[in-house]
Image 1: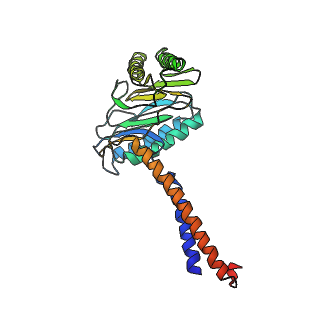
Image 2: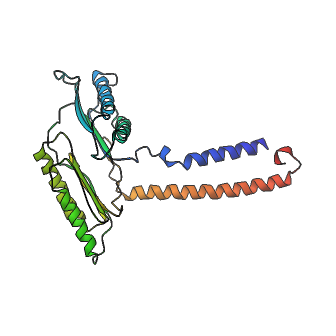
Image 3: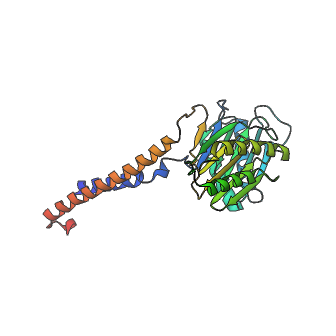
Length: 296
């Protein structure tokens, strides 16, 4: 009977592990990452300075939502100096900003291990580092875009609200912008190292793409290298599937993410069914062995 009890224990432990998808999907909470193929040597001066840079990110979130750093903070040394920035979404409080940046640091350390440059965008923050300065350099490279389901053609009120919200994101001079009209909400933000003119230029591009590509949809997003714009209708925005660009580029689309989710659900249901069957079998064995102490 001890063998049966051990088997049941192992089965239950396996079920618990498989029912916790977060343990096997550590990158679900980021949007996209870009890593350079060029690598530095472990234990090098560059790695030491990079670790110092990432630590500075977290400690600075207590006071500000954006900062750029150069490590060491003196005359640049080729192959050793690291340049980096962190930025949190404009509405985040210090605690939420610190939590997001800490997670981003952990993710970029894994995804861009030993890479000379890395960029990681999360829903609420971003971190970036490089071995050459990128501060104040405009970059409107398209990184990620997607539209949600199409709106009903006869929903003119809804389409008007979407147009109004997207249009409102293009006005103003702030690097972080929000807009809302009824059940439609939008947000746009550019990197803090850009000038006012550069920020407007980047956001105009992102918002223009968002309007032309997703203006008839129930949500959408456009991420450029230095800015982004997105909107949602009643929370039904396009699902932001993580995308990774590094030595191994993943060209799979969002359908793969849906497939993984379905596989997890099917796996959980199967485990529950097997558990019920196994417990029923165990119950029959106990009824046959009622005279044994462990079944009483």
